[in-house]
Length: 249
Length: 141
Image (cartoon, chains in turn cyan, blue):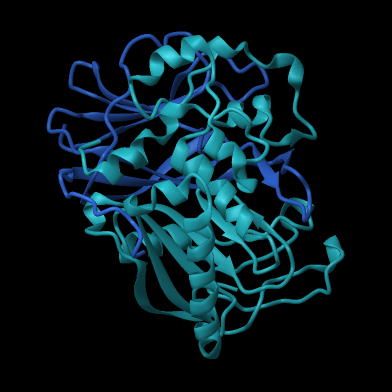
């Protein structure tokens, strides 16, 4: 139920495109994998890497990306799955304390985010994003400072979706008010007009785009991970493209 | 990875600092700071955002002048995205008591004296951005 319920093993660089100081570094942490299951984690991580590099727009940006796998073992397999949300009531002793049913939401799978960020900072100080792969066949995940996803079919999409937020700086108001997600309890009456919101720029050149409105990004829209994000600013891709091109941000 | 284009190492990593914060509702506490070398995004425009809603963080010099700013997704989550199996898009649900952690990375600028987190107020009015929390970068300052 805490970092006492496991052990941190080796860190493997499974996509290596150069020095960490010069790349966009993803750190993939294991949770709910017992020591004997770490080879399975290695396979899951490789599968994720394959999916990542085949998914637009990451397929065109692959040379900007490093991916690390951190072999974190847990005492138990899986994740907590409380009865309160209809789960079997499983309690799993895992390093990052993965659990479904956060905030009473069945599929909301979360971990100890502070522990994940602190470990990532130790093993790859230049990390751009931290992902936690939970060894559970039940569909679930979450976003925020750390993206969490299970091993259910299609759960990789959760990680890719969250990477879109981090990699492309898509802001909350963008997601909420422009089609990425359906509000279930948001107060739409108080949304500010589009030109009253400061959106992540990612590049100063985006300023004039802001005045002209959001631009379509076909490659992103083609991805199932971004299928509901019909309009993605072209400028949002610039940081990764610049890393790819080897120029200073 | 064999089909990728070779990448020139023309970029230059710079001294930077990663800050780790914890938040509980609207209160933000600095947990740690970690110096490192990495590519750091350039500053967003320092002017022209007055009166806008949203979130950004910035560095200020000893006169209070902003010398670096990044507009970002608000890391203080007042909602969660719920990904449901087979659903076309995630749903969003408000959180009763927002709490969590987040990190930001800024360039380690010698003239920077203060790190400021700036956010719209945590109400449904989505008002203009104001200082949420400020942190001195040099304890002796």
